[in-house]
Amino acid sequence: MAGTTESTPTSTGRAVPPPPPEATPLLLLGGAELWRPVALGGGWATAAALLLLLASHLSVLLLRRLRLRLRPDAVSSSSSSAAVATADSSSSAPGMEGLVTEGDLRELVGNLGVAAREPEREGWQQVVVKGNDDVSYRVWCDKPMEGPPRYLSVTTYERCSTELLRDFYMDNEYRMEWDNTVIKHEQLQFDENSGIEIGRTIKKFPLLTPREYILAWRVWEGNDKSFYCLVKECEHPVAPRQRKFVRVQLLRSGWCIRKIPGRDACQITVLHHEDNGMNIEMAKLAFAKGIWNYICKMNSALRRYPQRHISSISILTMQRLTKKFPQALETYVDANHHPQGNTGANVVPSHFARTSSRQQPGKKSSRATIASGLLLIGSIVCLSRGRSNLGAQLAMAFFLKKAFKQDKGSSSQRSRSRADVTESRHLE
Image 1 (cartoon, rainbow, N blue to C red):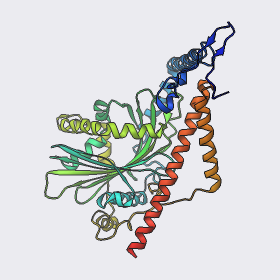
Image 2: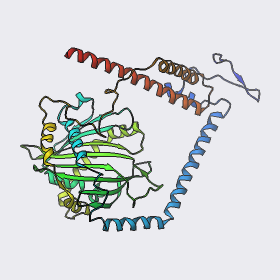
Image 3: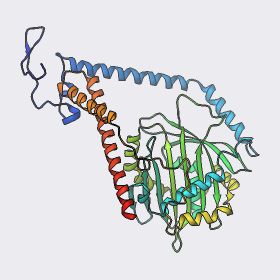
């Protein structure tokens, strides 16, 4: 039985001593029970089998990459077609006008206005607040009910003009020099009538398959030397999907660069929402731990940028395509960036709109509560018995973590809902 401490006889007649009392499951208390064998050598045999499977998987991936590299015809044909498309893209391109519209710009202005108010009061969670003599950085995070989080950031650069910061952000050729994640960028098409440009960027992250971005963007210039840019994911016929890359399915990013009155400084407000296929929790942790170092690296590259006397294709194209900011939106910008007692009324619902649990509180049903309780009890029993193999223990630990996480999320969601109701009654 599970509660006995008697020795277990083996096929050789010798008795295997019972495990010590402190050998509790590794995923719960950090002991060595996870690798305790059911029979002599069983645990290490399981580990060896897992290592063998991992090695075989890596070898298959390596062979696939070698086969792709031995096919120069596909690469050359795609690059030649891209060159032809770029050469023919200086004229009007049908179908590009609807990729980035002035309606998208209006939505961007409304959502960027959150940073001028108090993002915490509208459900955003502050992630990083850093600064030095050259640059200061603040960023907030919004976690939707589904999908990756959105980030809203405000970065202030001292001794920097809006034109310099705009060119720095839009110079894709220079970005490949200082940003080691960007390994390739190419222009696919642009349209002078609408001011829209389409490009392809390849990014490489540690231990991950390279990510491929097919993006369309548009830049506007205001009367006060402010600049707006909106970037969206799209598809293009000269950039078919390739197995050696992971095509990014969602990227909505926009920014506004404005001069700070009375100071030799400018500020860029960015709203970014991206799903590049990474694990959401790992991506959030990597962002929180590494974003300030990235901002410092970006600031160093910005200070070196004026000494770069090479006119890149990206900047020359952007200068041709930049459109004037619509006069009808000037009043809308003032209302959002300089609110007077109006918090949140100017934010326009869009693909950037929040869908977090705070806006849509829900109540956990009794069936879900009973199912979570049974899952918790069953998982604890399976982990405490110590008789299952490695795969089963890992699976149970995963389900246990998910159950705890869901139960904690639902309880905190209900508490936040009750607090909101109490606050609203108090205000009444």
